[in-house]
Amino acid sequence: MFDNLTDRLTGTLKKIKGQGRLTESNIKDTLREVRMALLEADVALPVVTEFIERVKEGALGEEVKTSLTPGQALTKIVQHELVNVMGEPNEGLNLRANPPAIVLMAGLQGAGKTTTVAKLGRWLQENQNKKVGVVSADVYRPAAIKQLETLANDLGLVFFESDLSQKPVDIANNAIAAAKKQFLDVVIVDTAGRLHVDDEMMVEIKELHAAINPIETLFVVDSMTGQDAANTAKAFNDALALTGVILTKADGDARGGAALSIRHITGKPIKFIGVGEKTDALELFHPERIATRILGMGDVLSLIEEIEQKADKKVAEKLAQKLQKGKSFDMEDFKAQLQQMEKMGGLSSMIDKLPGMNEVPQHLKDKVNDKELARQIAVINSMTIEERRFPDLIKGNRKKRIAAGCGQELQDVNRILKQYTIMNKMMKKFKKGNLANMMRGMKSNVRNLRM
Image (cartoon, rainbow, N blue to C red; front, side, top):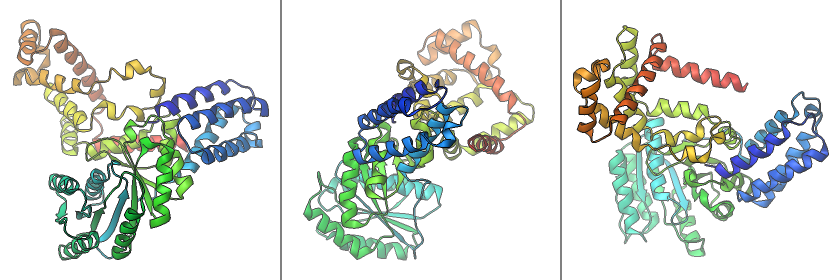
């Protein structure tokens, strides 16, 4: 995400860090490059113009002139203005209404709206402990209704039936009435999309909006459409008075134009960002954290939160207790850690949140292969129970048998034994703390560094 913009901005700002002081002359060249980087990222021209003016004003201010490290001060100004453009802190969802709170989802066809309805339902269920119902008012696409039903059943969401012969208003009202009887907290209403904005669609969705009076009206938009995403969001906002935006397919967007344009053009906050196809790949949009990612500083807080949410705490605490009792970390424990990583989407899903990853050559990033996790787990499964408990037993013929048992090479077995040894040393350092304490400590350290 934002790879192209990150490369351009970090490269440009690195040049000026060597300057002893900032002048209008050397600032001019830097801002020209920043301007080009933003335009190439498909950020809307009015946004770029205002952004550059604000950075220039800050860069030539007294605070920067007297700074011992003017280059770092300029980077801080750029970061601050990136946050301003994207909208300050995350605003979250407003669900303060007599249950059920109604959330209306709008957007063009192909933006991932139906999948996002399911993702949002799962997020509310897992993070806010809400009982969620979903319904599709898209009477033009039977496949969309079936897709939402399948997703809802997989996730344990309440799905309300709809019929192609019904009007969207009747479908939504029937679902809301049924949700009240079932004491649901939230109902998410999916709406019909089109290939482009047209009058017929706007009339239909305005009627639906007026009939159900949702507390949240969210526009779902494909981030890969760049500043067009912001322009489309504005067209919907003019008709519907949106309360927020959800950006989808951000994991495939190397530019970032939509994220940097939408708030400025629509005045509406980006509330969530979709970062993958799986139903758990939805994150709260934190402008400050996104700004640090764009500048190659990583996003450690989001990474820690992701680990807290997706890691199996029972498995982690069981391991912590085992280590505290003086028992050794064995191959069965190592396998559990690999399965945890696999459950979280593998290393590739976390790579842009790690600080300094913009400095790693692309050809090395491309070598990150999450299929390797499955291969490693297969090697451990090929071991006997005794070998998993006492890995030091694995030598010579045992290695050959294990490799043959999982259809891999001897070097694959040696590699996982080496990784186990490294992990074993790390685990010995964690004997005195459990998972919760470790996570709290990491979060505190990150926040203190930012203050």
